[in-house]
Length: 325
Ligand code: UDP
Image (cartoon, rainbow, N blue to C red; front, side, top):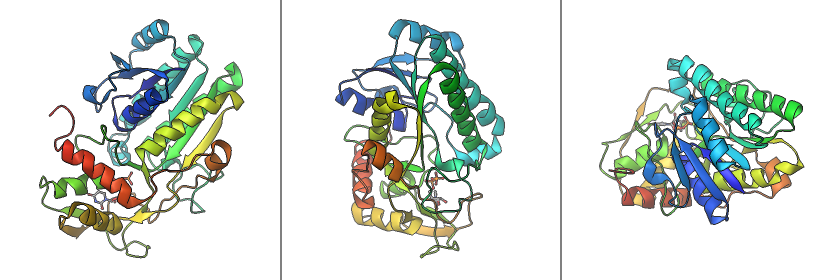
């Protein structure tokens, strides 16, 4: 298939592109390089630098490349930032996604994978969180993804548009050649590895008085290559109908476990200090992937935190200042 990947120069998108190309698909990347990196784009992918706010630019890509399907990763993605800057999320993520979906409908593209979020489930009743959990977006970020999920629902009803929404928490890890490079970096694993690289003095643990075994937050860390695989399987399955899947590692790891594993893998003492809680952090977040396992035979190939950390560490050592630097 020919797949248009928005955000294909970003962390998860670039690794989805890598895996699509390995699987024999042809890929067009559309990315404004706001957070993405030109060097992250697989050399065999066509690259268009453009912004989803620019409807004419999207239409031009649809006309020129005639994709069979779309994977939509391009988005602002930070929960905390979305609380500070709600319009950046509620307006831009929604308008940009809507431009893409509308252009797809008008150009006859009928397959769409939305890289959604598990931030749809604030205050869940059951853990791990499955697809039957009540949707209560936890932030303007989560809400922006939910609005796009609803858009897709109507496209399916009105235009036979087939879509899948994939909801997940903490993407992490790296392939041999692509990894995580955000500016500014806010995520736990790359921050911890920056300490190991000597680029930061210490890591601050955001609170150790949570209701968890060691008092620090438990999260579902899922390898990017596993996420890429899920996106590809979902794309192939769309002729059988639209769907929504939660994706998870199957278990959670605490902030202290992440830091301890990083110490083992890097051999660096990684000084850590307890700081105040970060607003909006629940005790435990773990997603259930039973449905996608059942439907698409997907399960994580890299469920071990140690392996995830080793792959991330390998990439960070080879790219101590990220891409292009
Ligand atoms: N965290 C931390 N110190 C940091 C960054 C993150 O203790 O410098 C914690 C954060 O509170 C959360 C977990 O690490 O419990 C994962 O946070 P991250 O920002 O990586 O991902 P999120 O869960 O927000 O998507």
